[in-house]
Amino acid sequence: MSDARELLEIKQRLALIEARLQQLFEHLDVKPRESAGGWWGGSEGEPPDPASDPEIQDLLAKGNELQAIKRYRELSGLGLKESKDAIIRAGIELGDR
Image 1 (tube, rainbow, N blue to C red):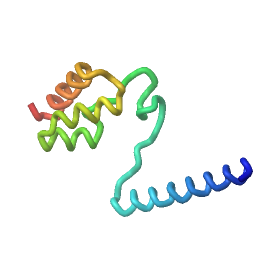
Image 2 (tube, one colour; image 1 turned 90 degrees about the vertical axis):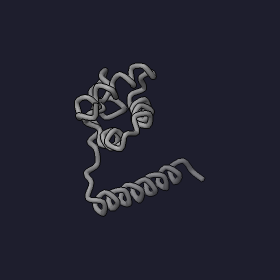
Image 3 (cartoon, one colour; image 1 turned 120 degrees about the vertical axis):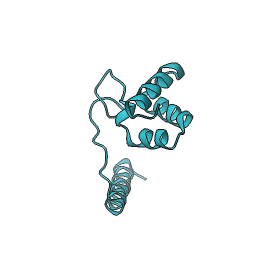
């Protein structure tokens, strides 16, 4: 297969995936996160705020602090101690502690 044809097929598949994702967002009545700055969607050089992340907020509300730490590590790339400290601060800000 030629490179141009392969690239076209990839672009078409990506467009289909994006359309289906948009349908899911609409069906669930959820707005997609805006991506700006760092790879996690925050400003360059600073990790995301766990208190403003809806997934982490949900985990903390359910009392699942370990999963919140794990998820924050995935999002931020920070180590265990830094992630745990950030999640504890987020729990305090959210009134969970």
